Length: 287
Ligand SMILES: [Zn+2]
Image (tube, rainbow, N blue to C red):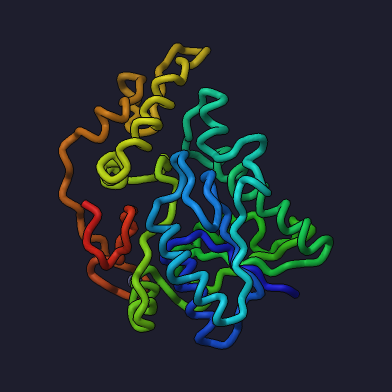
C-alpha cells in the first residue's frame, strides 16, 4: 500500500516527515493542498496560507524531500480549483460568505478534503492508500472523530496517525526539529481561520495589513442573516447582544497575557506554542 503524508505545512507535518526519515519508513509522497492562489513557485495574492509556511516548504521541506527521494506534491488551484474558484477566499468572496467554525464547516471540505480526494483518485485510482495525518499525541479526541481512521467507511483510504503512535506531542515535535538543526516552522492555518486566537488575528492585522483589509471587507459585505437579521462576524460573536464583533474592533481589544498551559503528554510546564505568523518560530515571537 502506498503511503501519503498529508502535509499541512506547519510543525506537526514537518516533525512527522523528519521522524519517518529517522526511523527508516519514508512515505511515497508528501501532499500539500494550497488554500490560496499560489503555486510551488510563486505566492498568491488572495489571503490564504501564512507566508512562513510557503517559505519553510520551499527552503527546507522540498529540498529535503528531493534528497530523500520522496515526491513532494503541491496541489495548487490551477490544476485543482477550490470548486470553481482560484482560492478558498475567492470562493467565499463570490458568495458573500465568511468562514465559520463548527463540525460541518465547509472550508475544510471544499479547500482540503475534496481536492485531496480528487488527487487520490487521479493518481491511485481504486487502490487503497495509507494516509498519514499529523494529529499530535494528546489529540486523541480528533483521532476518534476522524471519519477515515480505519473504520472502513472510505473505499480508498485508511488514515494513520504517526505522531500519536510515536508519542510525539507538540513540544517533542519542536525538540525533534531542533535536534536536526532545522528552523522550526509555526503552526500552519488559513490566515483568516475562525479557530485562530485573538493573538493570531492581531498578528495577521499587523504582518499582512493588505490581506487583513480584504478579510475586513469580506466580513462587511456579508448580509445580515435572513431569519433574525443578525450581522455575523468571523470572530467575537456576542451571544447576549446577538451580534458579532467587526474584525477591526476585535483586533483592537487589549491583549491578555498568555497563560502557561502544561503539556499532559510530556509534562512540560508550558507546552509548545501554536501561535501563527509570517516567520519561523525561532525568529522570535509573533507578538
Ligand atoms: Zn509536550
